[in-house]
Image 1 (tube, rainbow, N blue to C red):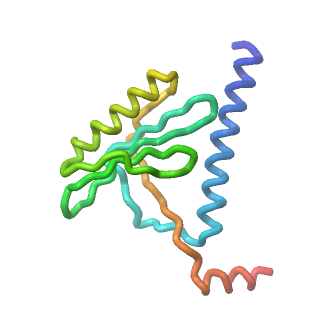
Image 2: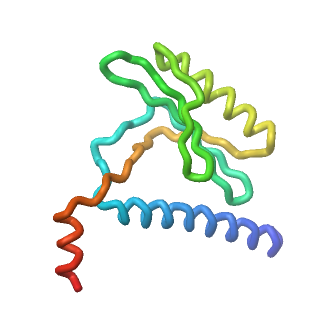
Amino acid sequence: MSYKNVFVSLKAMMQVMAFFILSLAISTAFGATDVASSQPSKFVLCKNHGQVRSIRVEVADETSNCRAFYTKSGSDRVVGTGQRPENCDRFVDNIKSNLEDASWQCRSVAQAMILRPQPATENAASSDSLIE
């Protein structure tokens, strides 16, 4: 492996780490995270030159209705809905195929949990002032 390849790999790894650190910082700025969040039934992570995209399916337990999400630059977008998870899986597979055709490296993630930040409460804000 040449030094150039090592440098490119390290640079990409640092960009991914920076993305996750920034995500953590943003979520802690809003207070506690919602641990009772959703677990997607299907989750695909794609990377290309330090950029990360994700595609996932979330299913409503009571109705089995599903929504397919595409995350780009930290923003979620609903790209499809269905009455069964299999319907939404098609949206994920189609986007994954398009990204791979454009030289993205995609892989399915067996277990993933989506944590959503909750707004800080007054108690959380006042406890921060006690630390000073």
